[in-house]
Image (cartoon, rainbow, N blue to C red; front, side, top):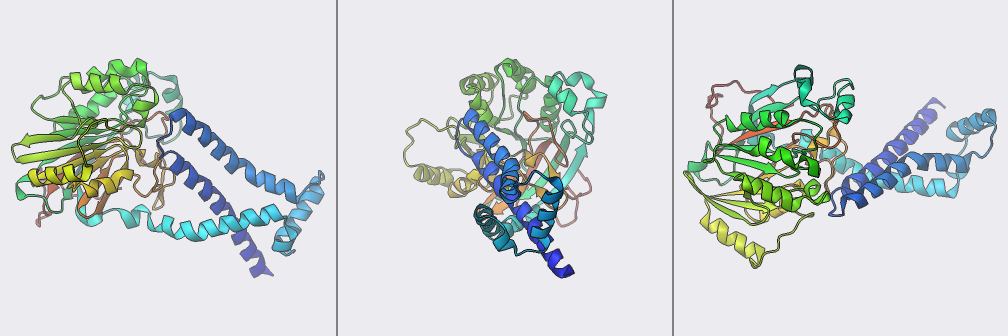
Length: 426
């Protein structure tokens, strides 16, 4: 009898997990589409309501009495004594079968995509990591928006706990002369007006001080028109000798700011890889930069067959750098022979659990590529957790500013160019 009760409790628990998993799966993928933000938000609300209300609907089908004593007795008898299959209604049985089938198919895939299994551990190491936490207590003047002020009162909210890290990446097939090149990577800046320019500028200036040769921002720069004035204080007056590259993301499009942001950054000396691919003559050699803003923004050029053009550029360039807002473009980067692909969009999931990692990430791959370093020959992909977001909530997922040092192989003596001890990424 005890074994039967335990098995039934486990079955109900599995159904509950599968139910939430199904709707989270849908939530992630609807956010990976190119639909307009308003459309996505409406669908999101439907998904959240369905996840919350469906269990109540099925319970109402099973227990129609208003007597709470009878209700509890029937619930106990159905769960622990009766035949579950015959004691429940047809809609409940049908939905349960759907959930169990979904869990059987997607569950193992989800587990195999956890960070412990997917991060390319053999191809990167962290040379330096410093976390300023919590900066809002030392710099309360940085927080100007009431929403962020209220959210910062939540225990352990890391929205301003900026992590500054240096990662060394082993790049497959990269010419030796590019070994040691440093690339600054920022993403998901999300200028909303909730924070002053000082917070973002701290990250930008730190990256610029790390002997970088290229600086990249991979999308979602400005959210609201009133925040366009922050572009110059955050991204202006930087070393003109260092190429500064950007693509845009879904938030830049959502509020009709695409042209404003493109023009604003271009006027500040930034190079628009979203509008066209770039050929940069570096001291180390010729570097090709491929930009991608799909599925939200498409180029309107007449460059001919994309793969043929990419092949031609690959033959000319010694190093191919891809910049995409979404990590869903991993295959695009591989098809174009990118040595390194830089992405953002997912914010690392914003909430990460120990070992399990994130649950929610706006991607066709769910949370598989939420943040970190991933490898699929010939491309190594780095996905940033980003600097900010519209929703000022982060747990176990601090914002990050990153410097990537590309090498052909790790040094054997365990030291770095800065003679810093190695540390493990959390």
